[in-house]
Every structure is written in structure tokens, then in C-alpha cells.
Length: 609
Image (tube, rainbow, N blue to C red; front, side):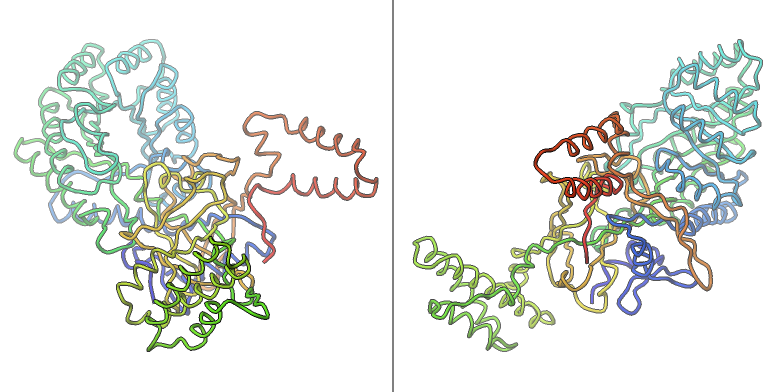
């Protein structure tokens, strides 16, 4: 059997039992059971399942480990965290974050005007709001309004121009001044794909010279008392902890120097995000070289050490780790529509009264194949196939003979793989990769897994069922877009093996895990495939409940969303059909009913299995 690296990436959130993958929580429902219940309501296409309890588990883990590190290191500051909305702004994701984080006073981070409005609407009074990214006067004024409304908000400046605007708004408006933060531009850089977030050529942050000037501007404007935070971020999905330690030393010393320069209200260091999630499902390809325990201990210990050496009080520690919080809570489920070798079924053999000798020999090889002779017979079959192809090219056999040969050889290969699965040879392993199966999934990689397409970011993938048998088919996954990039190819360094199933007799579902961060907000409508139907699953000791159903957009809504007037398009289609001279009135009525039905369905493919 193959557990698909469940012990590597799932954080014990899922287990395999009786051949199915289950939630390792309370009544432990199987994902297949949940999917079948949803699909019983005639839902087709991919499905996104949200599990709020997994968000709560991640928030609790983050707070618990930092609280533990604070106690062990006799650290005097407190720990706070906010969720960066850019990671997932979808309503039921945000609702899960805010509801599950309420007991921890968990806050939100905004990087745009719309996100700031969302943060002001969704953050409980008293929880923290941090504001990052480039800002104009209107966005800064919104921050003042948030402070006036009672929110504990910090506006982090990315440049001196923003600070000048804050000073301008403070003079013009009779509003409460929000807390002010300074994003510092560190020499230190991160690691991994997103390392460019740090370093002196980074997009954001103030240099040392600009920081000193900022202090001068704040003092002259009589606003230095509102400077409460310095902020840095060295990159998302940090694979290595060493760069973080270097950045902490640099930022910690900047903090201590600012305190000595008279920033007496400065009492927070925001270390940004970057806490990595394990996406790989192969033991030799870990996404990070540290644990959450080491991460939190390193942050607390290093900041405490610096402050003690500088005789400066310990700052409160903020994090903005969004990926760590929400990646695991969402699972994309998609049915497999087709196996591209499905046509090589023995029932499709169509022998003639008299067959070519090579065909007769292949029939005998297939009949007599066993565990002892399978390698020898496999060699013979492959040799016969080469001969058959040569004869076909020369015109000595026809297409039916070639089809029969392909089916027989394919079945000999498959049977050899299964017979030798317990003790495979190198030759069979190579042949297995060469003759990989292509699984057509009812989804769009561009829509639901954009980081795979754009960044080659892999996600754990596994079947929901058949997990009590060994998968032997080297698998590549094709989506339903008309784009050759819509493929997750087989990678021998990260191999995916799936089951050989008969889709005429049953459905076969795949789950893509840890997709709750960025994938939804970055997903594109390539070929006008839109967000999958989504459902929130709450689980208790005895049962589970499917809630918050949001069905994928129907075809007319899709067209409306990109600027077409669907009413005009709809009327044009109906008029063309009504005025057609090529069908009878009865056919017009039936066809119009079909048209109306299709327009109200989503754009994903529908199967009758």
C-alpha cells in the first residue's frame, strides 16, 4: 500500500482507514462520504471543502508554541498574530479565520483599500489590524477612521511619502491618530521562491537613513508617541531558518537603537509571515528545515538576547503568517473523467477468423503469463509489438490487427507490473514510467492550482479511496482546459502512482491538499472555468454538517462577470433558435428547454457515472 506521504504533509489531520482517507477529528468522516453526499444533489465538477477546525488547530499551535517559548526564555513581551487577507479573502475562509481565532484575539492584516474595509468590518474591536503595502491619502484616512471606530490599528509606512501623508491627515482631520509602524529594509534576505521580499533591492521598506529621517519627521510633527512597531518580511514559505535568524539580529538591533533615540512608545516587532507549510509528499523533499517549535524558540530567544544586551525592554512579537494558518483547511476534490489507456480493455479485442501469426503468439503469451515467466514474456511481447508496427507501416496488416496487438501488449505489460509489484525489477520500473497513465480530471489547474502552473509549486495529491490496494500506474494529470500547460506531469523525482480503475463501473476521486492559501485568490478564469463549488464542513463527536454552499457560477453569470450583458446574449440565442428554418416547432421547444438548462449549469463537464 501507499499512504501518499500522509505522515509527511498532513500534520496528522487525515488518516487512512478501511481503504478511505478520513478526517482525524471527532466522528472521523471519510472525504468520499462527504463528496458523495454533496454530489447526490446533482453537483458536478470540482468541489472545494473547507474544514474550519483545521484553522483553529493552526492558530492554537502558533499561539501555544510562542507562549511556550516566552515562558521558557523568561521573555517579558507578549505574542500577537494577524492573518494577511491577501492569502485568502473568500468570505467563508475569512469567516472561519475570524470565528476560530476569536478566543485568541486573532487579528487581520490588510494590503489594499478593499482589504482594509474588510478588516474593519470583520476584526473584533480590540484585536489587532495591521496595514501594509503602498497607500494613498484615502487609504491612510481610512486607517484614521478605523482608529476612531475603536480598532487597534497600525499603519505601516513603506516610504517617507506615506509618513508625510499621515502627518498631513493628522493635521487636517479631527480624528484619532492610529498606531504607526515602519517597515525596515534589511540587508538580510530569505530563502526559497519568495526570497526577493527581503534584501536591499526589496520592493518595500525604509533604509537606515530613511528611518532616521522618519524619526525626525515624527518628532517635529509631535507624533513620535504613535510610533509603536517596526516591521520586516523576508519572504513567504521560508525553507531555511538561518536567514530568519540573521534578519532578527538586524531588526532587533534597529529596534533597540530606535528606543534609544527616543521612540519610547515603540514596543512591537512584526516579523511578517513566511512560516512554511509542508507541501511535498516525499521524504527526501522537505519544504522546510525547521519545526514550529524551533521557529518560535529562535524568534523569542534571539530578540530577548539582543534586548538584554542593549538594556532595552522586550518588545511584543507580531507575526503575519497566513499560509501556515489556512493552507491545510481547504481540500480540492475532483473526479477523474477518463483514463487514456481505458480503451486497451480486453473486451475491445476483435479478432478475425484468421489472424496474423504474431497476433496468435501474443494471445498465447497473454494466456500463459505467470509470475515465473512474466519478464521473459514481456520481452517477447514488446518485440512482437515492434514487429507489428513495422508490418503496419509496410501495409501488411490493417488497423484492426494493430488495435488487437496494442490491447494484448498493454495487458501483458499491466499484468507483469502487478505480478512483480512485490519485487519489481529496474526494467519494469522504467517501463512503468515510460508507459504512464494519463488521468483527465474535471478541473482547471489555472483556476484551482495556479501556483503549480505559475511557480511549479507542488501540492499533495492522493485518491480518496482504494487505499487498501497498491497503486501501480505512473500518473500524469490532465485538466479539461484546451491548454497543453494544464497538466501535472509525472515527475520521477516526485512520483505519483494511482490506481488502475474501470471508470465505466465506478467513479475515482482525487484530493488536492493544502490548497487553502493563495490558490483561490490567484485562480484565473482561463477558458472561463470559475471557482469550484465550495462547502464548509463542521464536525462533532457524532456527525458532520455540510454548510455554506456556494455553487460554481453558471454560464450566464460567468459571462456577466467579465463584462458581457448576459441578457442580450441569452435573447440572441433564443431568437436565433426560434427563427431557425432547419428544425420543427416541436424540436425548437425541446432544444430551447435544453438550452435553458445548460445556461443555468456551471461550465465544468458533467458525467453520467
